[in-house]
Length: 393
Image 1 (cartoon, one colour):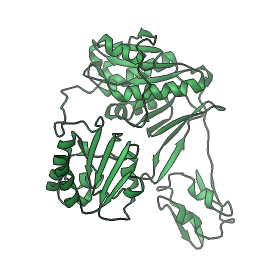
Image 2 (tube, helix red, strand yellow):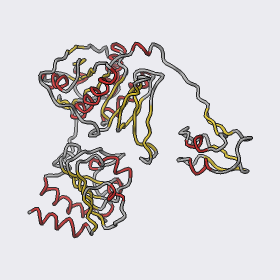
Image 3 (cartoon, helix red, strand yellow):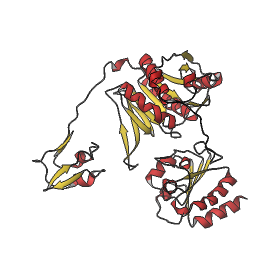
Image 4 (cartoon, one colour):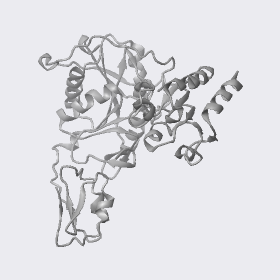
């Protein structure tokens, strides 16, 4: 709960300018807070020179926190193949576990999964693999996967649960957090450990990407986070690494599974998957017209690259959402990222700034993209891109 101590307020207006959601106004020289808008971010509390704004917190604490040990990674599979984001999660989990002095396990759900795929989880850092195989788990159904993860969590009591912030992770991990009555931080870009408190520090973009917020869940277990693809690195595969595969049987309540899997539709709009591409050629508002993406497609074809886009291009219906890079799109980490006609808003940079090498083409020399690129070309993309394509011949 947030409130203004009227007797202490001097009407300076510092709180008004600091509020990111415009929830504060001055009425008769006194700050007034719209509780329907307020997100309790506490920005106003920190700037108030007279401590006239206070947040009263009613803290709750789960029981038996000391019983939770270890890190559990959700091992995502599609068509019986482990997805790359899983190996990234295992790499980060291994790093965190070394700091905490604990073990890393993986939860794998599916049906008739190849032994090589199961073993790969151990090769990439899992000490144990909890394997549940059932026909109902063959293809992703949120209710079934939620029941499986909740039952496994009750059995092994992991201290931390990690998942990729993929369409699958985003669909069922929030359900798991609700069932477990614990916190969840979504779309994290960094994870560290507070060794003294043994708490997971979860960092993610907030307020449209304008700030980076670090969140902790000190009073409940497990601590849960989903992490964006391509922001963590897997550890080196070691086929000599030993581990255990433990079968875990799920008792499904089928009355609560209301979804049927019909079919999976493959995205045929790009020959190279954007999240796995070594080179990405991306276009933004500077292309001026959807037909001009053909310029980028010719360049991409020469480079064997994928096509990316800014949110502005997608919102204008110039290209499908599956190509969008940024906070509300895909996070990518190619060897080379070529940004054509993209200004470089923070929301876009969040999704591509970890690229090994960034090349920017923009006619505005003051475009923010030039602050993060390795090579900047100030020029008309309609002249530069065709010339690059010609030179590559």
